[in-house]
Length: 140
Image (cartoon, rainbow, N blue to C red; front, side):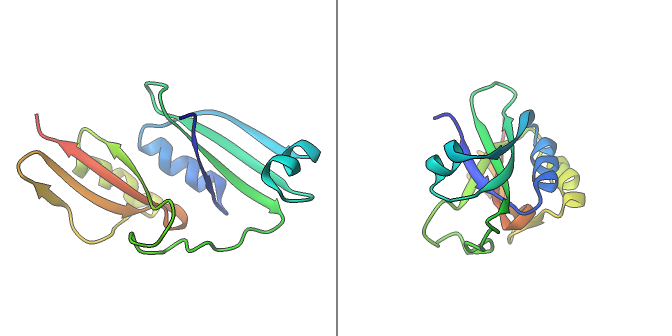
């Protein structure tokens, strides 16, 4: 897998949130023209993208913010059982610290922080634009 793409209306907020999770900005670009339109199937599209990668360089998330055509709401606050891509999961070292660092970026725990069989603590948070992020802290 090369990357997962997520469309947002506030590119800077999405980048800041995921950088707080430890992802690193690989690059930004402005996208438009026949090539892009041909790939994505939208005529006259213009967008800005940011590619973030995990520190181990294994995984990437590409965030896109469209200027034209205007983005439509694809269910940004849909529950976890709705069809489609629903969440991105991260293994983190300290769940409480991560939640505290994400709170200024608008993160809200969906319900509870739970412990599973003394193996891990986990929860879902809603990040920018309702993106569901699962956080997992494994016990040593």
